[in-house]
Amino acid sequence: MNGLGTVISTEDSPTTLEYSFVLEEKSPVKKGQFVQTTSEEGIVFGYVAEITRANRYFERAESVAEYEKEAPVSSHFPIKSWEYAVAQVRVLGRMEKMGERFMQQRVSLPPSPGTPVVSADESLLKDFVGFMDNGLMLGKLQNHDVEARIDLTRLFQKHLAILAQSGAGKSHLASVMLEELLDRRLEDGRIATVIIDIHGEYSGFKRDPSYGRRVRVVNGSEICIPFRQLTPGMFSSWFPEVSGVGRNELGKILREMSSQEKNERRLFGITDLIKRVEGSSIRKNVQEPILRALYELKSINLISQSKESPAFRKQVIPGEMLVLDLSDLEDMRKKKLIVSYAANRLFKLRMKGQVPPVFLLVEEAHNFAPEKAKMAHNPSKSIIEKIAREGRKFGICLGVVSQRPVNLSTTTLSQCNTHVLLRVTNPNDLKHIEESAEGIDSRMARSITSLKVGEGIIVGEAVRYPIFVEIRDRKSRKFEKGKPLHLQAIEYESAASKTDEEDEEELEAFL
Image (cartoon, rainbow, N blue to C red; front, top):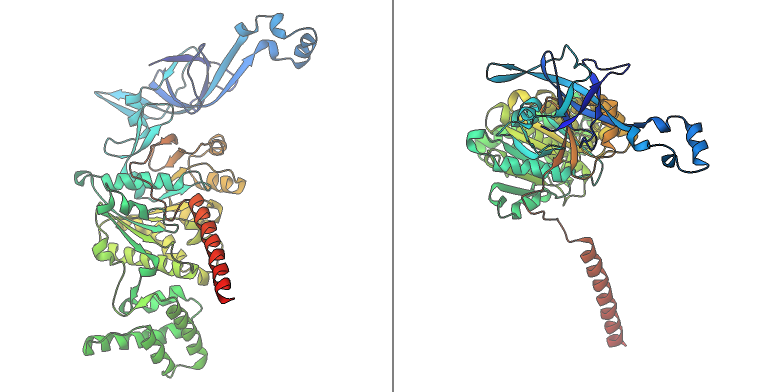
């Protein structure tokens, strides 16, 4: 372990919460680095929260200004010999040896002034932070040669939020996590993964030679719900404007049709339901809202007579990934109904134990569980919040990815006990993150704005203390949906030029 400096006494430290140390000359200390020192209780761990430089010759502005009139201050005094740097350390805890093992404890006595400070022992640091040998390898602990292997249960069971502005690397980080889930061994415990993919960013896994066999992709236009699964409860969440009386009347008709299907061995569809409602004796003021909702449901072409796509019971498999690629859909209402159905279906199947434990990752989650929106326009919000509140009891884990945390449901975000934070610069989003993410102090919140692409902060249940991580490179190839922008531009102009030539030829032929 390299010696870094010596604990000093200031007006406010050392305490059980923080201390400062003066750096040795050319000491390789960096902000965010883990360090250790000792007290009467044992080894005290902390991280460098800030570094400041000082020099006695430059403390008084008027003196410096006066000397600089004639010549640089350095020509009058040996200024380098009086320059020093001080690091402020936030105390995290201590490791106390009990027999052959080290146990993590609280600090009740601060280190004494004059105590040497060294770089954290990396074998102890791994245990101190909470990394596991069989955890998901997301990258390296910043400023240390320690692999960031995060425990699967602690990362996912109490839900996960990945928050960052556009272009900061959210999809890259999510892809790294997905690779780790697909690579996971049977003996370490494998879960299934279902992804709500808005922009087609994850469907490329299907084309990767290493992962393609364990990935299934269902395009949005192929997704359909069998008529037999349409229930009054589902209808109520999709169309809350229909009154309670209307839902009861619809429930009666659906039960009659279900009984008829079994007895007569025939299949019904949404058109048959519309005819039944139109021919019923339901009062007109009750009937009209039902019919408006049914015609809307028919127009988006989501209900089939018998086919379910995807077939969740067959296609949600341990160690494999199911991607619902909604990038081919323009209708946002249809996307929300699909997310509502998929999340509800997974929740019910998992409650009955008919599918394995599952990680549901929702991209652009602020679109499906917004903070301020009417229920009628966001049928997916209630089920996402329900999974956030209750899912961990049944082994359905929620992951939300968002570039606008301030617009994401507070209920959902507050139930995500682990946050992975990439670069965010919007003040409103930063304030929202600081208020909702336990363990983020004001100094760390300021660091979020300076994160580079590929750097992130993990805070919450997955780790014992907030950590800075350098995200590893992807193992899989990145397949962009659609062609690169420059090729699209070339093709467009080539096609336009060709069309102009054809128009001229047609005109000449006509003349």
